[in-house]
Length: 108
Image 1 (cartoon, helix red, strand yellow):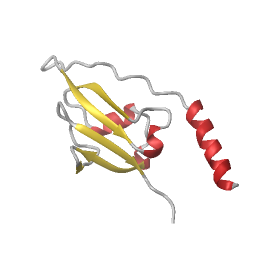
Image 2 (cartoon, rainbow, N blue to C red):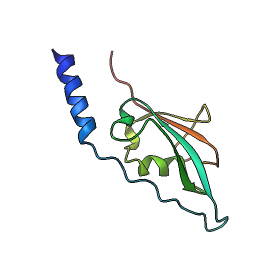
Image 3 (cartoon, rainbow, N blue to C red):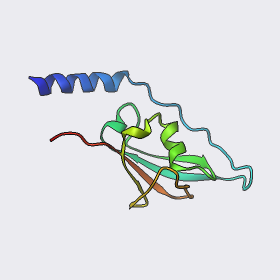
Image 4 (tube, helix red, strand yellow):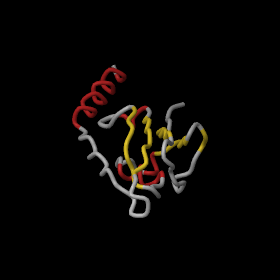
């Protein structure tokens, strides 16, 4: 019974959480070009957002900037993968990067 109730709550919450606004297609003042970054969200981070998307970000964007733009509290981040390697929030992104965000995993 508990699992069914939790699943119903999760589904209802997924419908009620507004999607974050799309990023501004920023252009770098220095180069005049935007970078394309492929984002992949996993588990609960997909709720009200997306599973995968390619977005434009200005040059100099850091992983922490993307996390804030997606309205994900940094303390909920379990793992960050950049181009299939572990990464830190202060790391700067480059054009064509693949960024994956995983939430903390609970259970026992």
